[in-house]
Length: 171
Image 1 (cartoon, rainbow, N blue to C red):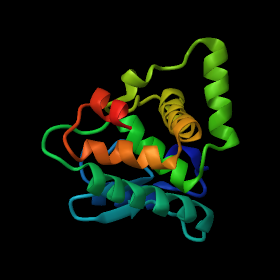
Image 2 (tube, rainbow, N blue to C red):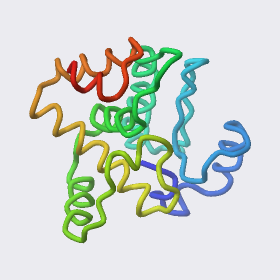
Image 3 (cartoon, one colour):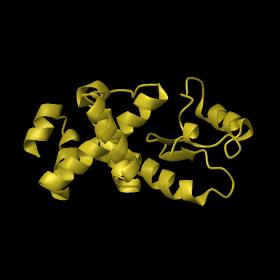
Image 4 (cartoon, helix red, strand yellow):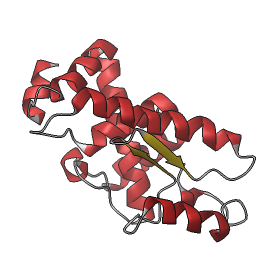
């Protein structure tokens, strides 16, 4: 989960300030975890005693490190939604909360095309959470339709410098 999910008594500014100081200037205020893939370092804003969040954020951020190892090349980065979708899928699955967000956005005509979330996610809370939900929804769909082996093939193809279209076609 993200900082904005937490109640103010669990994640006070006493915890947030040193966390954001460690991450540096320009860190978005909705960041609750971060993987620095260059230094292979994970950061997470975990309140004392909040082991439930730790069991989600650590695998999520570790997935980013492994994902980066698989796709790292100087020519082309995979879409951000794929990176985040895989991290959410592996750390918590496509849960009822995300299913509800996607269903509601679909009913109201507010779904974002995946092309809209290939880079940074929106900054407003509603769209930010929807971007994560849509990302894990797309990964879940891909795995149900094509299987985990093809998802691995898709991810590895980015490591060869394949474009998005080439990567999806090869998988």
